[in-house]
Amino acid sequence: MKRVYKEVTTRPVDVGLQPMGLSREGWGLALDGRPLRTPGKNALVLPSEALAAAIAAEWDAQREEIRPATMPLFRLAATAIDRTVPQRDLVVSETANYAGTDLVCYRADHPPALAARQHAIWQPLIDWARLRYETSLAVTAGIIPARQPPATLQVFASIVAAQDEFRLTALHSLTAACGSLIIALALFEGRLDCEAAFTASQLDESFQIEAWGEDAEATARRQSLAADIAAAARFVALLAQD
Image 1: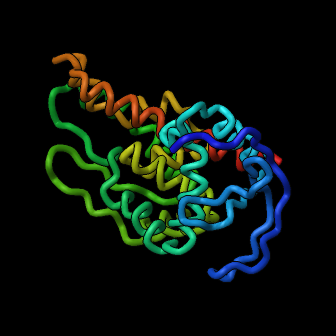
Image 2 (image 1 turned 45 degrees about the horizontal axis):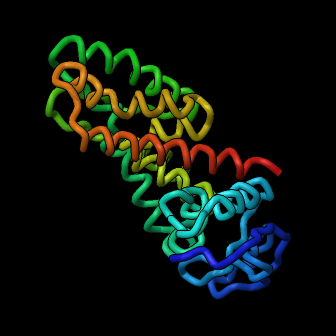
């Protein structure tokens, strides 16, 4: 799609009662004075001026061709409105279900160096989650599956369900990129930064790369995951700003 607009602006908006029963007010964007809508044709109403300004900068940075891949904040916001609002229960379920087979709960029994690294990086996250959420996660080694206590799963399901549509969308993206709800929550709540979250989520892959090297496809995939993590983390930070 070609860029046909010249000016991108932000402005307060109140779009009243929507089909999903929500009254949405906040900040919107306009391209040459015309309100910007989501790909699903819904009103783009953002909860913080800081997020609106950052998304406006993404649109303003487009040149002759508009490239959606270079607008991760807009994509997250549009996903929140177009998908998370109408399919909230599904998004909650998809995110919370990671707790049942969370990456940090599955340890190698060999080689010893990998097992030691997993314990050093993942166990502090298990301990943090136990103190932060007052619940315990079962840890296993080898191929033996770990069945998490129902009460633990309910705690994490409640945490996920408590998020508004924008934070839920970011948490869903982080969880998918990290392969772990625990790592995502640790980043979400400031226990980890983006680099540490990526390192924790890619621990096994990094260990294999150190031994055998990395091909171009794996490099591209890891770079994409790191970008997804960084975008979702920035999205959450912008939501918190007035």
